[in-house]
Length: 148
Image 1 (cartoon, rainbow, N blue to C red):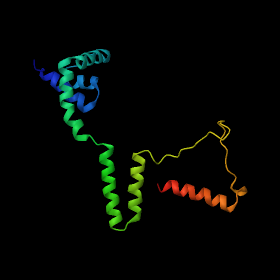
Image 2: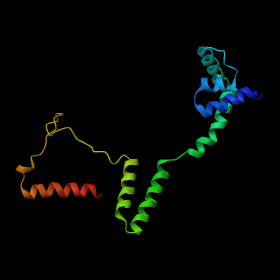
Image 3: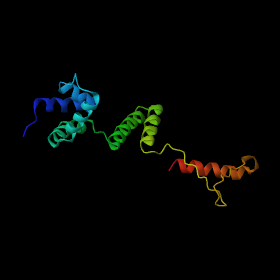
C-alpha cells in the first residue's frame, strides 16, 4: 500500500529538518493543534512501518553519497604528502603526516603514571642529576621511538 501525499511530504520534511514535529507541521494542517498533539501524531507517523521504510529508502542514497571513511581520508592525505615531498615542500608534507596521525589517534600524549614501586605516583627524572651519557641515552631512546 502506497503512502498518502501527506505522509510522503512528512517523510521529505523529516529528512530535511530532522524534526518529526516540524515535519508534521509542514505536511499536515496543524495550525490549530496543540504542540503536544503535534508531537504525538508525529511520533505515530514515525512508528508507522510504511513511513519508516520510506524514510529509510529516501535516506539510504544520501548516506551512501556522504559516506567518508578513515581509509578515504588517509589515502587523500597520503596523496597530498607524496605531492608535497615531490615538490620539495616540507611544511605541507608534515601537515599531511600530522593529519594522518590525528586520524589514527597517534597525536595523543601517553603518560604512564605507574612508578617503579607500582604506586600511582608519577616519578619525574631530575635531569640535572644525570650524567651527560645517561641524558644522551634517554634522548637517543626517545628519538628512536619517534622514528619507528
